[in-house]
Amino acid sequence: MNRKHNKIRQELAEELAQYYLYHLRSELKKNDELIHLPTLEGRPFVETVHENIAIIQKEFPNLKEKKTRINLFKEWWKFTIRKFDVYQNPKSYEETTFKSQNRIFLFKILDIKYRSAEIRNQFSIEMDETIHRMRKAGKQISFEMIYVGETNMFPILEKIVRHSDLDSDICRKILYEQNSYIQSIAYKVIDHEIRETLKKTDEILKSILPAPIAEEVKIHGKVSPKTHKSVSILFCDLSGFTEISGKLTPELLLEELDECFSHFDKITGMHELEKIKTIGDSYMAAGGLNPTNLKLHAVNSVLCALRIQEFMRKYYLSQNRKNLPAWKIRIGIHTGPVVAGILGAQRFNYDIWGDAVNIAQRMESNGVPGKVNISRATYDLTKDFFEFEPRGKIQVKGKGELEMFFVKGIKPELSLNKFGRTPNRSFRKIYENFTSSKIDRHEDFLKESETLEI
Image 1 (spheres, rainbow, N blue to C red):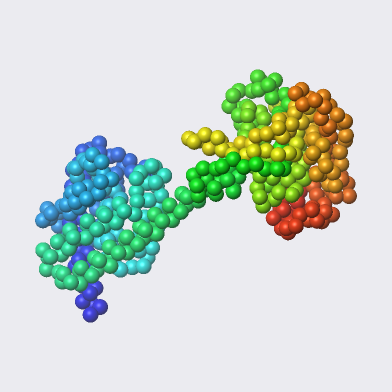
Image 2: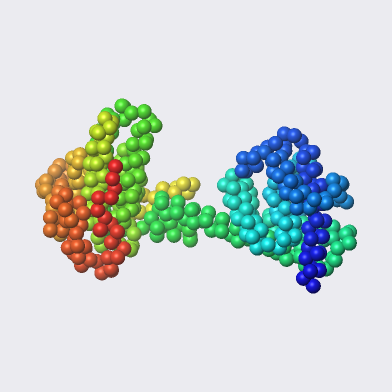
């Protein structure tokens, strides 16, 4: 029985190869400009046709150069564009080419002839790559398109079998099994592509919105404004930016800004702060917006500020070594209540509002380049961890007198080294005592040493 089946498979493969060869020859007779257009791989389409002809003639040396009873691709295309409305203003068979379908049909023939797991594995890889390239190029491709295409091809192949001397029952089973296989592979590939696309979309959404806000947007399509009783707001401003910007080309200026702000993004992420926005040379982030870490956002914000300060110190030295202009940074932090939400319907713009934001900005503007300036409210929440230089009460426009402190660094007994930038085990122990949850999720940034190098 197996010998009979194998013989029928060989005969069926050769019969389909004859029809396939006629279609490929018809492809070469199309408009010269059309067949020389590049495929998604960058090769002229005509090259792929000659390649397929060479393969099919090598596999079936007895094929004849003759016109077949029908042009199976022309028949298939006629039914496909009629049944599937994705093809708006569809072109005729003579006005289009069939690179992807040519590869699929070549697989059909070789799969029938050899019934090889290796051929099927290779086909699966090729389909994955092809669909990925099509989606990347903005081409419309879906499982429904492939399903309809295969469904429409099946009766045409049955028709070819009926007009041959082949065993129609066995051939039909072979074709049906193969049809189901191709559809299952297409489903898996496109399902994977869709999942990857959704994953990337999710990552992009979470890069511009805090994770809980991103989830709310996905579920409800909008976000209700929320009041947060205690949030630590961090403002950074590049000192000397205006003067230096006049010495750099716009391209180089943006490069330098991007390098600094990209590092700020990494540092704020390590310390569980949310980047809120950048305005020109100003950078704003906040801690305490995420409900998973509400208690120690002030400590995290000061640690974050020290790390940013250390990065900028190295950046400044690096620029000087290269004889390039560099700016220093002023950082201000204040802790207080805010309202958070999204503005606009067309483009998400997550922001925070409240007097606490204004005071944090005053902390920055009344600071000194190279130092971290904090308010009394932030000081009260962080004094067990850091050393400070009291500045007393300073007159602030629109706010009266505000008490301020410069952060000198982590307390010596809590610091890993003399620089006061990296917490030691004692710091972590106190940190743990201040929170009811385990410290595991904070281990990465608490153990962080001098890893952000220039």
